[in-house]
Structures are given as C-alpha cells and as structure tokens.
Length: 273
Image (cartoon, rainbow, N blue to C red; front, side, top):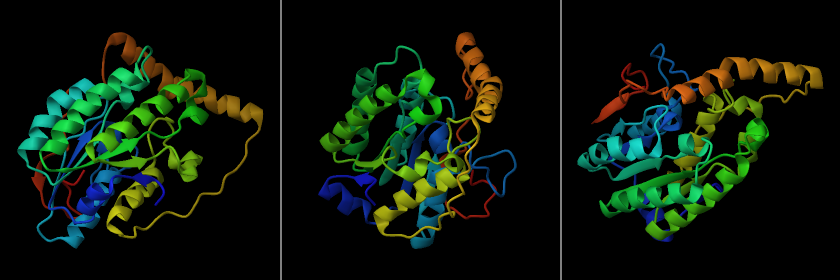
C-alpha cells in the first residue's frame, strides 16, 4: 500500500513472518475504540488483529502487548522499553507521543528526539521496528490547532524511520481514515472499522489480505445538527478530558498492560485483549 514506507533492507526483514511480536504504546496500540468480541469491557485493536492473522501463518508465533491508554512518551519509554527488549522480539511496534502532542506547549521536535533514542535502542536489538505517522485530526479537532503540530511530528518521525531502517505506516495519507465511521464518538480514537483498516495496512507488509468493512454511507447533516453534535461531544468527552488534565490524572492510571508477556494467540482466547 502507499501508506507504508521503509528502507529496502527493513522491508525484506519484515516480509519474513515474525516469531515474536511485541507492541508498545498508548491507547492506539491497546486498541481503544475496538470493542473485543469475546471479552466484555476490553479492547481488541489493530495490533491484536495483526497478531491473530500472523499466528495463522506461523505455529510458533507469540505476541505481547504492553500498551496502556493515556501513557506519555516518557512513560512508554521508561515502563515498556526494557520489558520489550527482554522478550527478544523480532518485530516490535513503537507508537508514542500522541498524548504529548495534544497537550498545550508540546514541542514536536523535542518529542521526536526522544523517539529517535528509543527507536535506536530497539533497532540495535536486531528487531524490525514498526512506527506510525499520526492521522490528520484537523477535521475533527480543528479548533485545537493541532494539525500543524501533528504534521511536523510526522515528518520528524519519517526522518527517524529513515535514519534507523524502521518501517513507517503513514496514517495521514489514506483518505479512508477521514471518514466518520473510522472514528469513535470521542473523535480521538479509531473505531473498530478504523482499527480493521489499519490492521490491513500492516498485514500488507507480508502481502496478506485482510477483510475490510464496506464503506459506511456518508450522510450530510445540517448546520444546527452539527452544532448540537459538537456540544454533546464537548460535554461527554472534551470536558472530562480537560478536567483530568487540570487534575494531573491519566486515563491509564493504575492500569496494567493487557498482554504483558509473550503468549500464543487465538481469536477466541479470552486473554487476547
């Protein structure tokens, strides 16, 4: 797919089905927004979906997911990097900085320097590193003025990937991800359809076709209804988020990773997710 970029060497490595896949990150990698079909109150997400498919390709495949919602870049590095390296993965996904970039005063250049340090460590371990350039969130959160910061951060991430031979999945470019049904009601997290679409992009690295949900019909709404929807979203999601920020609280406080150790994968496994 056009949404993938990498060096030739790292792509050749990634095309070999991995034996040990470890996913690092925040709510995006935890799978927030993609309700798990077999475990009430838990999430599936693109990483679980990828693992389910790769497990069918290789009988000895194992998978761990250390991601926890709400984590900042510094927390992901300090809490997840060493445990991931101890598992000796041959494929590791690293997506971090999203919770930092939406905070006032966040510097996309400084964040990228810290990402590069982490990616360098992961790459030097011998693992193939999978990274993500963030989606274009301007259409949903335009008043926050985030679009420019995300774009700068993405370009920095592209440079990091090129410097270290990592594979970069570009979530900014696909027009499909601008469609409303790809997003959860909170406008910050992908829906099940969004996670499914991203899993398909990742699995294309191994030339594996993944079932995609048919496009939802786009329905236009009048201006009054749009304002009403925006007001409802602000009450339900924006205000609680702002209160947590003021109180210094995180949505991931006290939460543990859903798959903290490498294990075999099965779609109907209640421990997957």
